[in-house]
Length: 200
Image (cartoon, rainbow, N blue to C red; front, side):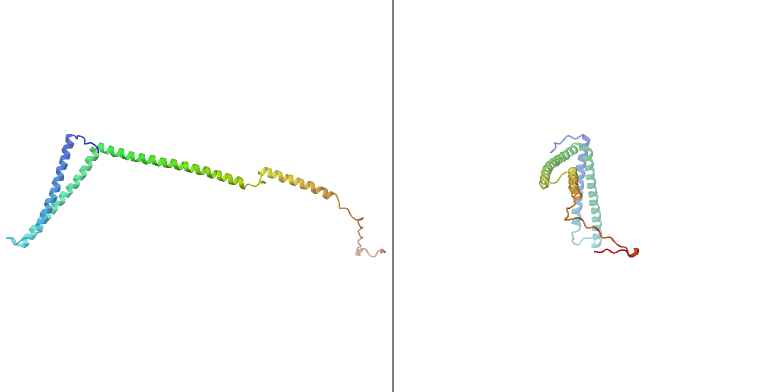
């Protein structure tokens, strides 16, 4: 709790006036409310008629209710004046509240930074493990005949040349036959007319 500091004479006088206003307004509210309760009490017969007494009591209640309202408005004005006084003159308390708020925000910022750093480290470790698992699984699934693209084309060209070299001798050498090829029989045209016939 902050130590009480000595106020200037003008401020001390102002605070005393605030205190006096507070006591007066509260006393006015209490007195008027008490009198209203007393007025509501039914009394015995008096020299004044009941109608006249009722009108008098009604008027007195209105007046005392107005006094209570006035005292309440004075208290609200007093609260506003006290707020203004604190805002304009109580610099140490305002500075202390600002410092406390700054400390709270700094502590919150440090906590957030620690959590972010911890999260970053955990994510980096998990990412490293996932990369190792991915590359190890990829290398194990890779088959032995999986080749780079250029080497695959080179082997394809080599296989094509080999197939062409093997098929060329087969086309050059004819198959051996059992005898001479038979001569083709001459064809006769019906338009040329009758000719000599062959005898078997």
